[in-house]
Image 1 (spheres, rainbow, N blue to C red):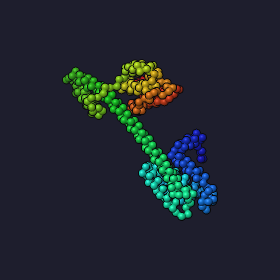
Image 2 (spheres, rainbow, N blue to C red):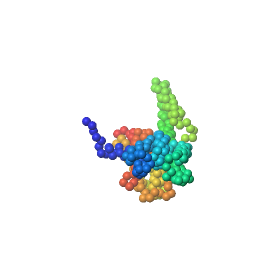
Image 3 (spheres, rainbow, N blue to C red):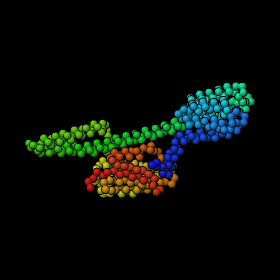
Image 4 (cartoon, rainbow, N blue to C red):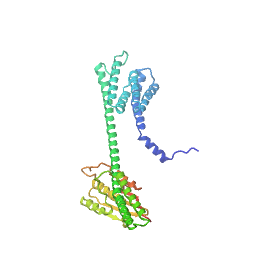
Length: 379
């Protein structure tokens, strides 16, 4: 049995289609047809032998080619030249020249405009072609040239704007990728500093036990354990950090108070609540908590200066919950904050690298960042 889409699903489909490029092309074709239909009475009466119905059908077919203006903009352009020569219709050529400038750039638009003016001039010199557009050549060109130049110029401007927007999107994507990469490097450094220390302690302890077990059967086992720990530490150095001047490891929960004090000095008081169970987290997870809170407080200072911030860190079953909330300012800060827009990507990369999730959203007149990550603690 055929199931019809529900009203919400149909509405979503319509909304998606309405903002699609294909919908804009259809609207453009309908607009061109609507303008050309205004000339139908004149076409049927004086310009040619077409009737009102046939003239409408011809103009509709010509306008329909504008649906191809993105992939094949030269098709509606050639059709427009044909309509200009046959029906003396100048409306279609404006849409066609704009489309060439918009989707093919400056060179194509200039070439199309020059060709359009040349064809119009040749038609003007053709016996029998009506001179109602102007009794002299200068009068005729005063109509033809501005139409072509203006339409092509607007198309070129739109094309340049599209390029600017595309470059801006690429810049933001590149900045986001760089932020993610830098956060991965930071995580790697933290892993090196924290795990490397534990491997060093393991190697030293194994060596001490080997000395104590000298002469016993277990001495060789302890020596092998110490060698394994040293090799693991060496591999960690070679894999994660290859620089001699590494940054210090990110602080843990003990550094949150300093972040709150720094935020208060900048004018944003912080209400900090940290559950006691959170103190049992591993150093790597504590570093992730510190990183998320630090980025949230920095964003608050940029976008909501002077407003209070609530930071709550709780343990909910197997998960650690980090929630940072601040009210939204009534007016945007002046001057506008300097921001690369990559802090959220960095926080998300830090949290997801540990199997967690991060959400940032506006809620109840405020802005809320919520991060969940596994505690790694035994229940």
